[in-house]
Image (cartoon, rainbow, N blue to C red; front, side, top):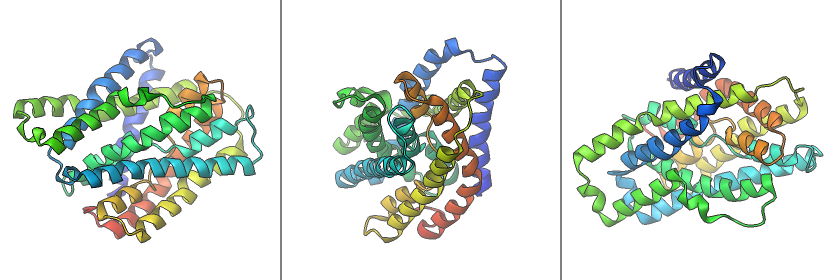
Length: 313
């Protein structure tokens, strides 16, 4: 089951890589591609998968889910920053890039795709919780993460206006007020079919970004191996231990256990390039963790199933 869940994800990423190599998806089309995938298909995907989710009717559980996402990314960034200090990295020599890349896992489409593949039949409500959890991750990444990369001194409220974040809050409002029960079936079907494009589009975009950033820069093995060990071994051990022992709801244990699975996200590489960081280091770390994930994910998935059961109830 684990391999069957992993292969489609990598196939979609590789398809994007090949599409860029073959010049079927040109860099000039990226802005439109991202706009459609992030601001159209993903919000539809989120709204469709959250409406009707019985677990999200609890305001307390929803807020706990968002808080859990904030804690996961916050703790990861802190651990990565400490590792950067131990490695002797400084601002200008890769400290910011190492910290944000290593400290930000692919909580978006990697986990979303895995959950959609593994639990769509046995526990469809889990996907809605993942999407809500990701709001907390986004809030920390687009504030603390961007602060670390850019040196900004303040939090930008624009994070609340991003399509996926706004879609989650809109969906929660419909659920909590009960208005979501009156959404017509044809609207839900429209959201469903538009949203189906979200996962392949975004994973393919991930592949094109890797293709663009994969250059001939010398590999910093010390940083890459350290980041891989932290992201794919140390932090998963921490999250799995927390999922095992914390006195929290089973659904939150499932969310914590899922954080053991993904590699680093590619967004840090894009932003490090924009903010004068070291995008080549970010790409090297991201690719290394993607390769490592092929071997670590079956292990962590087996442990996750042992903890939360194949239905992740």
